[in-house]
Image (cartoon, rainbow, N blue to C red):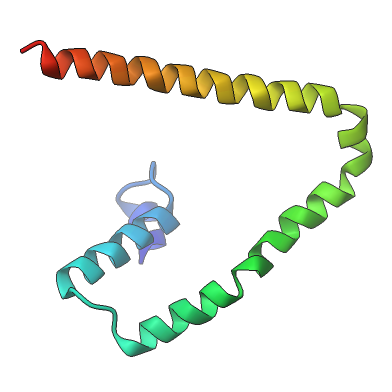
Length: 102
């Protein structure tokens, strides 16, 4: 359903995001999780680790490249994390001032 809405109405938002929002809206309106959906969610949660196997295989596959460029990758990750925290703090500071100066 989310993919269809994304394809025909809101192409800027990915289908899985729309699908999750629709599911969340449904569950909020309904107020409870029915038993079949709960069983599926529990089974999915129990096997969630399998979803990380492809990423782990990718890391192992490119391990020689990571060893070669490890310093650059580490530096890029650190700089991006610091910049993200700094920008988040600045935006929060701006919004704080805007809401509390009135």
